[in-house]
Image 1: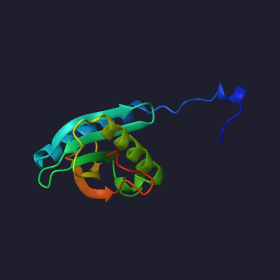
Image 2: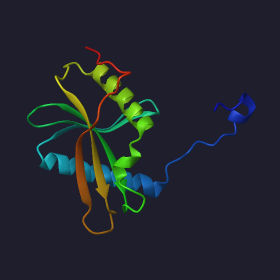
Image 3: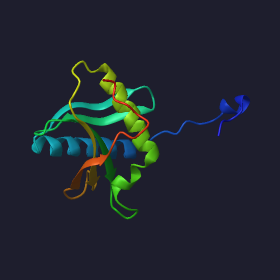
Image 4: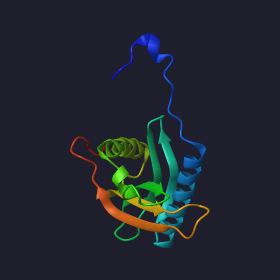
Amino acid sequence: MRVPWPFSLFRKKRKLRPEAHRAGAWGEGIAADFLEAKGYRILGRNVRFGSRCELDLVARSPAPEALVFVEVKTRRNEEFGRPASAVDRGKRRALGRAALRYLHRVKAKPAHIRFDVVEVVGAPDGAAPVVRHIEHAFSLGPGYRLPW
């Protein structure tokens, strides 16, 4: 819903809580280390295209080689469900848009791309986190076409 002009000036922007931001950054670091241990090469972290398009991790997978766009979801516990369940339709569309923008800027076009989700369950001050890697978590979607 669009807010009429005079009221849009007073609308507050949603800010990420500092502790949530720290936990997310911690989870992305854990996920990057986990993927590197599996043989992935991390090409980028927090790759941004404007204010709404962000890729948590961009990596190159070992054989079979593919360009992988990774969404990292960090949760303290699974009380409200698995972290990957937060990657809903809207989030998948935003990730698809960001991936296409990334591909437009890359000179060498990859033969294969895919979208993965890495779940990190735990806290920086707690015990060792549980890390789950979901390969091929979703596809680009019918409304998008690769730029080549």
